[in-house]
Length: 105
Image 1 (cartoon, rainbow, N blue to C red):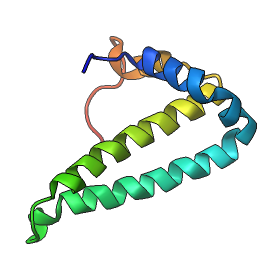
Image 2: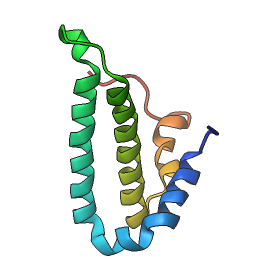
Image 3: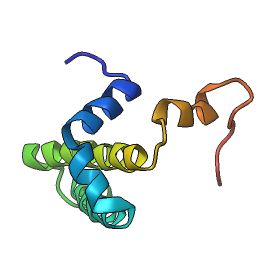
């Protein structure tokens, strides 16, 4: 699987879905993102039960976790697209010298 840049991924999402996403609007799209966050939360729980005395994740649970991360990234790209935000520019907050450093407690 080739590496994909953030810009290439955002452009791919724009090319495939922009007309529908833009017509749906920010509010409804954000609601869909929150749904995906919930699905990611469930997948994270299912993949970390072993830390709390449960069984290790199944192959299907692991595959679902990867899928849910992809879905969240796609919805973030969608929201950025319909709100005119270049994600490559946005991550400069973390990647450029003098940007965010350290950790939140």
